[in-house]
Length: 192
Ligand SMILES: C[S@@+](CC[C@H](N)C(=O)[O-])C[C@H]1O[C@@H](n2cnc3c(N)ncnc32)[C@H](O)[C@@H]1O
Image 1 (cartoon, rainbow, N blue to C red):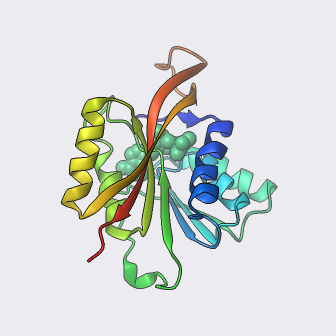
Image 2: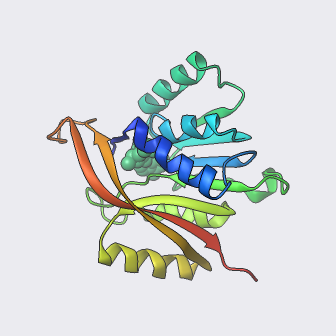
């Protein structure tokens, strides 16, 4: 599994992009799919998200998030959920129509496990009003992402090129920090 943690400053930058440039955080329901230790979730809480659901399969990462939620007094805003998102069905029917759902996610790039990002995109496309998703920056990925989104009747509205810093999490990560060039995609659903 590709488990690394986004550097805190990068998490803030990306959430600011969503919250300040596009007003997609304040008062919104945020889905942080593959939240890990929840840095994107915590940054969203400080930009006044209404509620944040932080989904991850890794109970140890969520335990770190839970401790941070308690120490930062964010218990009423961030809700960690331990689940395999390939099996999780967050139906629209249990969510309020009145609150916009913004997904903000840093999925596995699909390098360790091919196509690992698909389940994340599938879930986001099925339930969100707007999506921010971080992917490796290269021509092949850009082409794939655009085509994949269009199959779900979504389109790439904006691409922010960004140099992200990753922190070492597992022994197979050979450096303590690593810079990686990514694209942060903003997706919008095509109008009917
Ligand atoms: C690249 S890490 C990003 C972690 C965090 N969002 C961050 O930016 O620091 C991807 C996360 O997806 C989670 N993940 C991978 N496959 C998953 C699955 N099938 N269901 C739920 N979470 C999954 C991993 O446990 C990991 O925390």
